[in-house]
Length: 523
Image 1 (cartoon, one colour):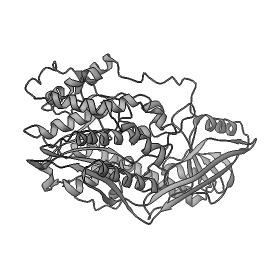
Image 2: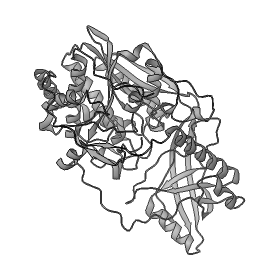
Image 3: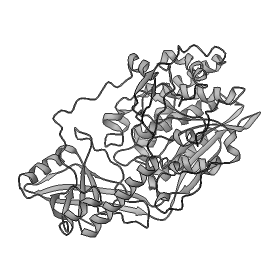
């Protein structure tokens, strides 16, 4: 999934003093029990370790994500949750890779740290070719390189200037940063047409893939946008069987990539060897979400939904993005089940797949249970992020029954608060729910929105969908979508803290007399 950054705006207004929650009841006895179970008998670290170390990377459509689906379903069932099952939705081709080796063989022999981009074809054994640097980003660049790339390995990026790269920012929010985050920012800029942007990006990517394949290039290399040997990797080819996957496409660490560019700029002939073993999986075009629940009592047809995305990219083991989030939401419902809670509303946990490809699994759930928009007639538009589709909203019976959706997908840091997504009516409620956790560092409610994670598909259709504020730890500069996203970068105490805060939010949302207030639907 892309980094969950806040949008930049023009002016800042500060929230009124946060003392409006006196009338919102909080069951402090239950909070005490939740803290005791979650801080003394936690299983969250073991869950995160199994997902990241044992199962490993969980690219949507891969054998590993399907293993993770089944393991999480079974685990939730073992903890006593009801109706543990998988829900399938149409995705496309799966993909995985077994081996990658990139070497410079001229002017000298040396390995070059690289990883394949997803859905890129393999090389069918080692291939060698001369390197050429060619900036090919869109169709206007094609003519300059037509007839010049056959048998070549194409370096598509310039040298990255690493001379001024700074160390990562502090790993945790300071008090001043949290105070600033409480401020609401007002935009004076017109909103962009996100669907149009997505369509341009999609068409450009497909056209470049088709051009490189048609020209007979052996492979394509791109430079990581991280330094210090960190490779940040994502999609290269296509998950759609009716499209060309292009040529073998790899992301190289910035430092060795820069050396190759400097050699070419000096007029030195550079020959590379690439050996990539990759496979497409066409036996099952569906991907799956894992679902389970703690049934409600007198309001059992109303649902409090909690989720995190189970899928990851393939550069490492997907620990901070997002085995950590999955482990926390699983632990939250385990805590409640262990305490024998009988919630008024049904508490449902969902582990999504396809988040990294456009919030697809969460959107599939919304489409199946809550609301739909018209399917586009344009074939290309059908292939971009469906939560961006336009048209009138058709509500399903479940729409009015969803009380809230809570999401965790900001790395492995502890919860520091929550984004209220412009919903002023829920801010004092959340302030009350956070009050018993100030000693654990969770004390911030902001009306600001945040973007690019699964809560957005709920918020866009007028349902209360929320993402928590988390300490970033090493997420942005180091682990996000990168070769360093491993179990080593998880913090045990942070995962335990997040689990008890999450469990308390779920409990209080399920028990309050009225559902959480909703914002007006912008259609």
